[in-house]
Length: 86
Image (tube, rainbow, N blue to C red):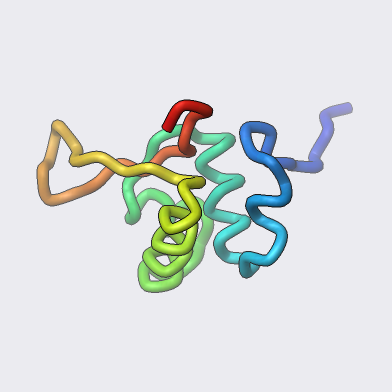
């Protein structure tokens, strides 16, 4: 039987404690899926693009998430969880 509970394994739970559920979902999705664009995050989480954008801004402000321009399409940014040295 597979374990269906999810947790953010790459983060200290204290980093997410007072964030809204949407930001926690975005962080968990990045933890499970790896690097994604804002649109991909919206598709995978089924949140609106605006909600994802707000969640990403909050996560970036806390240095939980980092972003970089996409090599494939410079109009997009790729988001990922910040590493220990980021």
